[in-house]
Image 1: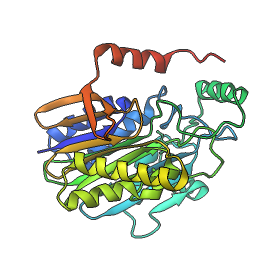
Image 2: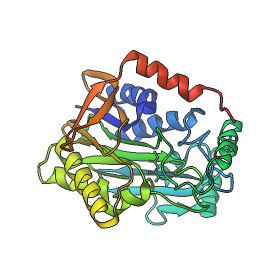
Image 3: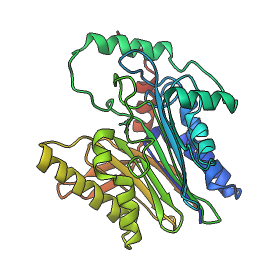
Length: 318
Ligand code: SD4
């Protein structure tokens, strides 16, 4: 059995590519990296890689991570600028004994020495979004961009190896140096080939409060199906945050276990994800959260898919 699950519709092309690799018997490490690179390279996704939205100072600072569920090796970069594929740098860092997580200039130096592709990641389109946002309510509370798009993936290969990886430009207009959950092990991602993996998207500051990806893997280890594990973890964190802080940020999670069973949960409207397992084509689903906190999903219609691309690629009205 092999499979792959990822946050948001935008992961579909990457998941498709990754699954072709998995079907040919390639490793979960290579498949997840190739899948995330696909998303990083596409200029119209505003929260990942090239074309990602800038921070307060109009710089694109990216976070990314990679985890190997066999060895539990982790690699991550945070607030890295001017590199095309942060996920590949993270994967490379996971092979080191120490210095696995590098930030800012240190991460850039490492990437330069290792010969990774440099690229100015700030597009004219992202600049236009920046100017537009500046004009809008200046003191608006910082939250994930609507239809926000951090990519997080969990992958299972034919040999039973599981990996997880993430890539994001984080929150639009974040402070320089701000780091979200995506490069933080246990919060934005976690993978253990003996159990399964999980990955998150949403408000990093709140996702971190529950170490939520680890929590889901822990629940799967206790025997819960990925769907149950995701719902329990998301609902509990949502409830705790509301109780203790009066509100909860966006929390959306995907997970897969070592048998290729998968699950998702969210506390928002409009969360989508892409998934494929051996014998099942990659598809995009939309999640609906019921009153009882139970999440159901249905395949995205052709109209929805077309509309998604149309809005992503529409000119930016300043
Ligand atoms: C962050 N979790 O940096 C990310 C943002 C995100 O879709 O998921 N956007 O907090």
